[in-house]
Image (cartoon, rainbow, N blue to C red; front, side, top):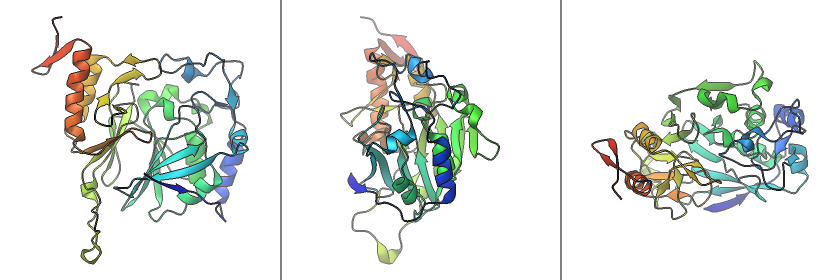
Length: 325
């Protein structure tokens, strides 16, 4: 991927500055990046980290704020995909929490942010406010990426899409105001032409993926055909719902990543069934170097078989059958 460092922006929208100032001192968990309301008692541990899918570090609970993070010399670097320049990962240096890495997707009809990280900076706001294809929405895959998403939505003045089945995990639920653009959805949700959210469950009840049908994009002008064609195959952005392995050739299905607890076999089959009608050749999880660049759907089918066999199961006519060992 091609790194692009963001320069300070000469002008930041007033509503962005107001949003940052309003939320600057809200507590943020250093382990997972979740932002809490001002009423939350810092004598408690982070609710997200107490859940067995995450963990409270052995060193104990620690907190920070956006104001403190901004004083620590952090910066954002965009990692632009070499094959498809319409896809960029928004990285933070140095990394923070579980190194959540949002993805910017720039379609012909508008841009979208998939997932969220804790830190949001003025250079990033300036960059995202001046995209050739204006930002239309932010969507979050599951509670480990809820992070400071309400602040992002307010600062960027775009709708925030959250799956309703994970509503109880949203720690700033009581902070949502009538004029905040929070959209609760279930099942499937079209955000724009060729951009669809799909609830797959598994990791969390509302765990979701984003599907981009790149065939829905208009072709380039005949007099401006690229020498290196932009991919037109479908792509799925999977986060933890379907984890791309470090080999970048296969997938894993995990209920708790840090605690190494696998997903139940029936949940794996349910995820596979939810996306069986999607046409895609590529897939990426929400971290750099977690890409499958070709034959991703075939890799998914093979990964399901491998995962179930490792758990002691095989599939016979769509049913789980216990392996004899």
